[in-house]
Length: 373
Image (tube, rainbow, N blue to C red; front, side):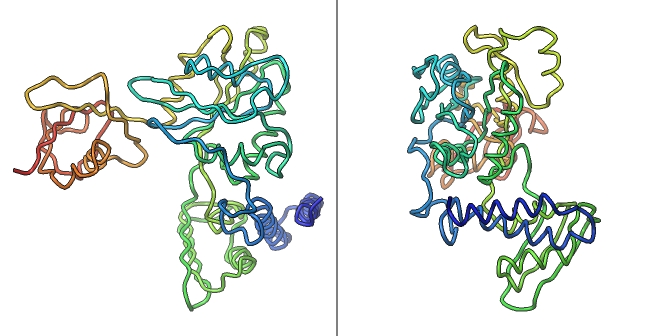
């Protein structure tokens, strides 16, 4: 066992036996900051500068293609390869024994005009984030995805879900969360400035902030909290390398369950029951993927012709896509020749509306570009 791993276990043991109250907040904050630094060092090597250091495990070399990327993560033999084959038609070896898939196998499916790249990743095991199996490679590749599908076997214990969540968390992936509204600006002098825009009820305070920053050797910075956060969330902001990824739990092999067991599963949030072998409930799965990836369809309309409804341009709504982004997706040089655009659809005040490059588009808008004369 490495010395870093041993230190992590010692800190975790000390945190487990420390009572949580106002008197111990200071001590727990120190332990959490040390634990985050050690985990970063374990993953990225000494110094922990980035996931690209030579000591870190690199992800699988898979070229990113399509409009969005989805990763299938789960234990061995839960049906990931069968699901990939069912969704994309790409052949991924499936067998009755574990660890059938030993590398990342990509496939592409088309839904509502969008090309979605699906990655069948090798099965992970408990301790994957610490380097067991090919866990680090699997989770490194999962970090590059726009969305993760955690595939679970319906007939096996639901505790598998918690194990995978812990492995992803240890590797810096935050499931179904948004980045905390915390601003941290490092300065050359002036000490630590601390402002709370909202009341802090989850253990965060000026002392906790200074303690964490001291652990990271930051002596001069401005901290502004715009939401109620925990110490762990503040540490995530200081680390600055967390991936906030939407996750959907896909319970496969539901053909082996009773109606009563399905009713119990139905109480779980962010889940879809399917049978990839029998192709049950795949339409709901596709619709959930579409909604959670926040994809928008924008149709092009050549002058004097009907709109092209077969090949929409796919943009993502979380970035508030503008006509400028739309032009860049068509061709990099198009924005230099852009004069104005006519827009039909939900974002237009009247049909059509003449718009500039900063106009924000909505789903199923139709755009006609006019170039400079």
